[in-house]
Length: 165
Image (cartoon, rainbow, N blue to C red; front, side, top):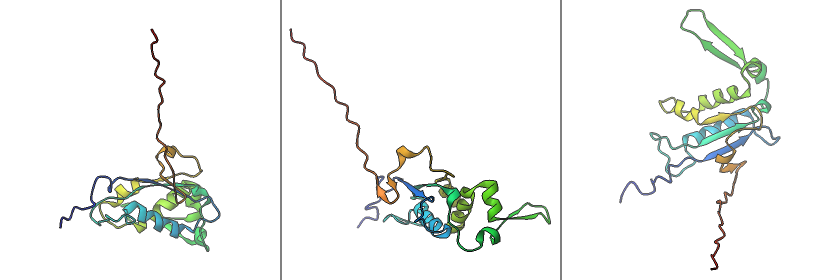
């Protein structure tokens, strides 16, 4: 039996998913980040293979209203190190929200959940984060809040005129 059954161009096509973090029923940061990491890797597809990049695009909106449990906003620290000795700088989550926004916090959470290999940066490029609900990718969306959007093809109707001579 051939090993290429099902591995068609259509199976590898990338779709666009939307995750809204502004609604009240949205889970916490870690749970959302793990779901986004699965979509970016393509683990939800039956053709998933660890060495191929078959993941989808993910649009996350409303990142400024992200739910964080416990005292993580005050206690969670993000570190940045330059090559100089003694140059370790830390920033807590609350100041990260003020300085860079909730999108950067979500990106760092998803980055930590992706495998540490050469595909990680390519997968993270497919994550688009926005602080508000507006974004320029509305036409690309196939799944919006878990429901599939029906795309109706544009049908151009032309009225044929008969020359009555």
